[in-house]
Image (cartoon, rainbow, N blue to C red; front, side, top):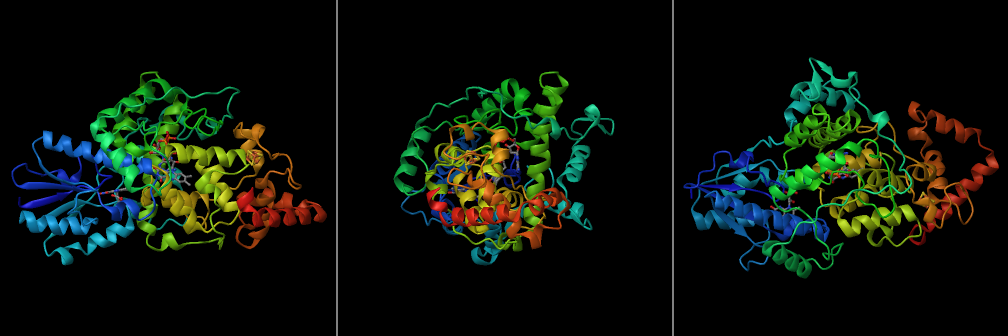
Length: 509
Ligand code: FAD
Ligand code: DLZ
Ligand code: SF4
């Protein structure tokens, strides 16, 4: 072979730029399962199993298309366990004289890649990842000169640029954003539809055995493994979503129900992020469902906004803010991550539910990530680096380009307002309104102090009080600060004291 085309674990798309000119005669496609990538954080077992199985299936598909593929398994005795090591070995054994790849999703690896040409001694071409709908350069241009970055304006530009849900130059339905119609609390007895569980083939079974053996100390169990591991299977899930689930997506986007990890969410983030589905295809399918009258606009617009808006926006923020972004800690939070994040052992029913889903499925839906585990970490002043490492490890869709802005910026306000115009801080009252967790909880969302008080409540006021200097002038918090200031000083004092007790006993809540 003359050229090596390196395909990473989250680049499993046949249209990948690194494969654009791959030629069965002169190209060698390299894919490698390596400990470096599997352990830079302790990824959830299901995340590793999903990726390894999807990688092995993708390699098979490439072989069927006639490509030469060198696929290095984790337990291959020759495996150097690093991407650089595997490239070095492959170059030496194949005599190839160039490497081609697609830009990767994390700064740490992108930095390393910039040095590969020197280390490997051959040209290394790093191509743009054109599966995204906004290039990093376009995002840089978009944000230039803007004092405040807001997703909404970026999203409108993306709608126009890709001509999505437009009538001439205007948004269909007369509004760009139907978010106000996407905040229904769950109706009593709300249950999500039954999801597809894919049959495990020999490849998946072998991967599950490997992961079970090699990653025993990582979070999660492999007992039930339902993931799609090929583009065809991911397509089945997308089809089910568009036909049966999307019509309700809008209404229940922010709802939380005990024992219902998925509700009306799409579960496609792991597939889009790994390359099994392309964002533009997903968007067009949802758009068609509206044009054909199969789903209401608040659902379709809300869903498209997540993918064409938020997903591209956070990626742009990541690459234009890194590397400093990862070290930001605007609220100087420094407490260690409570043990409950690893065990789900807590009497707080909402935390037990959200973390329990995470341990079981390597998934928890957006509002649980943001308003339960994220909100709690922010209110309790947990060290953002520890929180970000947790999110990066435990979700099957987590790569730093998407995890970091969502966690540090959106959930923790650790970037001081680059991502969000105010902290997404909320007390137990919000969780009580949007979920049915509180009914089965040892704590009471209506109480702020005393042994039965919901820990979110005192922490909420204490968080505002503690951070007055940094947050007190934010106009979007002025009502809350006014309420706090009007409160009887004895009550304020009792709340502060209760918050201290909560913070001292985080591991026993
Ligand atoms: P749906 O609710 O069905 O949404 C549809 C799609 O929109 C998703 O598949 C995803 O591709 C996209 N999307 C929705 N919200 C976001 C968002 N905020 N940012 C980027 N894309 C979005 N998403 C990840 O893909 N990887 C992560 O590591 C990740 N970490 C997060 C950490 C925190 C603290 C928070 C608050 C959110 C995080 N998200 C992350 C965003 C979001 O929670 C997930 O994309 C979503 O829960 C995935 O489930 P779904 O496919 O069922 O999504
Ligand atoms: C997440 C992950 C894991 C667990 N394992 C591998 C691997 O063995 N080989 C590989 O090429 N990629 C893996 N990945 C995905 C990479 O970590 C991902 O490509 C980078 O973090 C950049 O996004
Ligand atoms: Fe969560 Fe508080 Fe409700 Fe318990 S009472 S479920 S801790 S919000």
